[in-house]
Length: 337
Image (tube, rainbow, N blue to C red; front, side, top):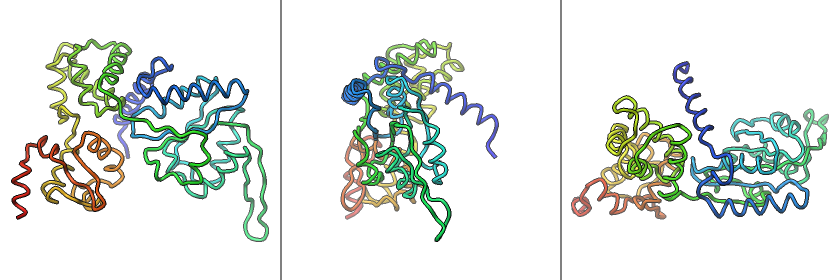
């Protein structure tokens, strides 16, 4: 059973995350190309007097997919209904969701790649013709009932575009990939967050946090909140350069944003598998980590900074990884001889 204290803290974190979420295009920093294209799609749909086409956003966790969906709904002046792919288990669940939508409203489906194939089959006519074909009964007595739906916009979000089936992917009018942010953009996001949270912070301190954010706004804001806690307990409430460094060290996060588990993954590749190549299953077993967690959370960033490379035979650690961990590449290679 989960602890009430943990649930309370999680609820507080969720409230803070919503508070820090951008509420306008101007507040949404970064992803300029995506924003520009979305604005055109929305403006064109408004001129035609039609709902906007179905949209699919893909990219790593915390890059702003959910925020974009909310901004789209706000821009067209419609309500947004939020669901999660794994939570829609039966056709009746989907029917209840779709029939309760209003004309032109937005249905946002997070983790859309985790929808079951059965649910996808029901979703296809809903997306194309705005109707739902429900099968009532079983066997010879089974019959199909057609339910008309309001015209709506489905916005899907996924961290694993390859796992979204081809038929489902083809029914989206536009697909946008969200990229990692730059350090200057992350710093701007942190500056906005300090104003909202009424935090006093030195410019150099925000730079340190931005450098350790893994180029991801959500992580940057989470780090800011943890550094704020450290400043209130260990300092005088102000986030200084010294406080920022000390708090990140306490959290076992280094200057590049690598966590203890990141370092364990790299060390496993280097020390247990002699630098690689190593398959995902073997690596996950060696690190006592789920394969999906490595794929979604750790590997994208490690590849982004050039510490891991994928080859047909598996993952390998690069010389940059050896240098960062202060492990001699030559000595490791000589030990193989």
